[in-house]
Length: 290
Image (cartoon, rainbow, N blue to C red; front, top):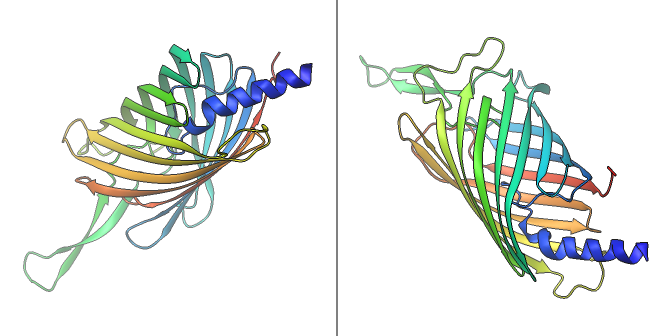
């Protein structure tokens, strides 16, 4: 009887949530209560000078109850002199305050917050500018990245709102947030000439492609997703918009593999490495905490 109840729970979990586990954004739904999750995100982004920018972000996730979940995440990258170095980390919390659930559909809303600390240098790139006295002479200048990103780049905090609608096999989610960059410790000051705050906005859509019919919780799920990620700086009104298609596979209702590609559609701000691939691995342990 206990085994049947577990299978029923997992089938319900798959049918309700699998197509709203987005790759680049978080939905309003939480992970199962009393569960523990492990996630590892690998980002491969190409800088404008041709250097491959690699970020590894291991993450521990805890589903406290149906309303609260928390994450603790580390930041590792190869930017410092070409070697791997731990640059910082973050704490993330989400509170689901509204749920309207029905058969094969639901609408949910949540609030979230993130605090990050980072000891890496403020990202910048070197460019050549035309000299004033000669059309053939060039000066070199460092341009700071104007994009604010507290998940791996800037110390700071973010607070926002998420709404997610599930309709059978399709999920649509959107978020808006305020993000503030602080100085990177111990000696990297945020440039006083740049905007240190921004509004972020996202729109995500996902569809369950496989299986066509559920017969077992051990079936592999395949989700196809498309996400739009944007930011607008508060002080100078510069902005960008990215598009991010992705594929997601869920195995045995517990293991998850995400493959995504993020590409800039337009930008009026400086960004050192806007385009690249993301590869994520995740594993859930149910009912860890009694």
